[in-house]
Image (cartoon, rainbow, N blue to C red; front, side):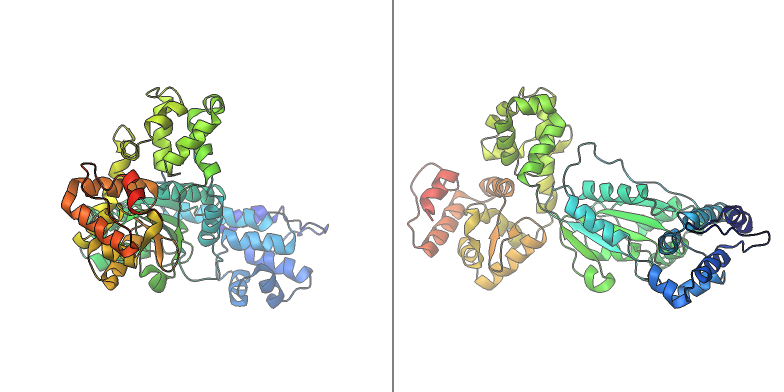
Length: 480
């Protein structure tokens, strides 16, 4: 099969810029063709290696047919030697023949991309660079996308994966796993995940080891020599990820997580992308893509207000757009008016998808002290959050407050503004305030506000039947 595929291509080989064609009996293998073209141009092996950006030893092994050429290598040769797509065509045929001979399974598990995916070009470009790493590297590229709940991490990962596949990468397959994090009680066990992955790759159940380390080793062995993309969605922590990583170059991994995953950078050289909310133009464009140009053009100002009240968060924006399309609200303006109360925004829902539940999934993973701090931060103006203010509100020392703030930032429930200050995005602040109302007594809330007000040297508003955590009373307490 190898000789047939290469001989067929060799018969058509005519480097651009020369009329020379191989005569009968001319070199027929990829390596021999490559060497012939190199020598015709008067290039040394070292010079060719420099042009294609591959190691000299790698090029030598390909020329002597001791190593099969990858498509990436062939593309580099075509560019360096100015022969159109000659070598790429040969390498593609060789890879297809090899897969057929070895009976490789070709999983294609990626979910469909979102029809209304907008923006994120900067992050897509960064992911492209990570996933399409230079073949000279022996490391498996690992990209981690983290960010707050509802920000569109999975959508970005899937969009990037499809782009790579459509460009001809990862021809041996794509695997997708929902790791069901971040809750420790719901997160998928690597032992079980590996069984599913091995089955997807064609390993019979009776050949799947009963030990975690052996399963991980078998998974790496099956993927050896393949170009497979693995998307690990909704990861709980680094320990859940490590047993699932391939060991051979050619594969790549994309991980999404609601929280930061310390350890992956030092252990496997992972590249982390923290995804923010959409920009104002992107948020308005997402609503427009859902409700249509006619509805959006009828009241562009209302679309902008609606995007603002959704905090530019993709999940909230999509749910709001669906409300308009399904005629639960006739216009963007009507919905924007109904979403003026902060708590109403958290009740955005479509079917089983509820905005509040996305926040719940992150909140329930917090320990008791961190969860209490998060609730009390909802009582403070978002621009006033630092260790001193947080310590005063919670009645703890500043060192402990700093640790709790770092925990919340790691879970992406608050955003670090600079070295000392943090911010609580509007939707998450409304969520924290609602939790404080239901879980903390009025006495506890009042004490927290008094302590924070004392820190600022401002009198606390007390003695009213109205709740001190309401926005207008926060303005009285903190006229900053």
